[in-house]
Length: 201
Image (cartoon, rainbow, N blue to C red; front, side, top):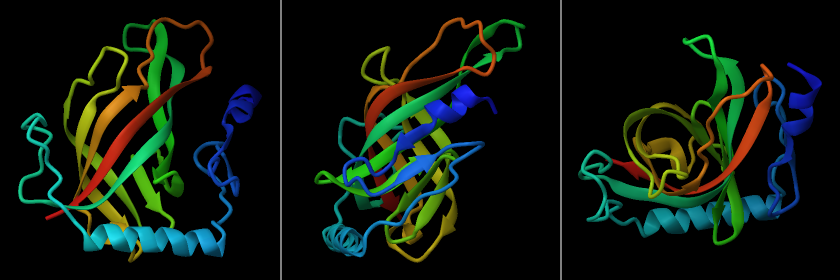
């Protein structure tokens, strides 16, 4: 892992609240905990969402993205980056290839969690999940990453995410980056936003 990567990947995590920084070496490495006050606030928001669960599937969603008979557990706005690495492909040519996502999860402007390689999501209450892409559909434009339906394959913790069985990535903006490159191991961070809907059957 080169120094340039170490430098690029030292980014602000809870940048809205200013309480923590994540440093990526080989993967996400360290994170300061949320302040007690913000943590309690996040739990209250999550509880409110759970108490007012609504059906998540909009009528205009592609059929392969819908999750039938599912109830929304939580919905968050994500702001972050899609990380690309300069690598040699099967055609022996170097190009930018997707490596991993990194994003802050927000509700009403307050940081409530993070999104990271796996793909994984973690909430401030300590609950986390790992997903596997089940289906995808094109974003609104060629510059927008795909919308996704993911099946949850791993749970940790007993919080809001503990009952989640599927995740939808919707309303994507940005995140697409491609083309040739000439420096193996170089990293590019492409900004994106999205809405993540966490669902339970």
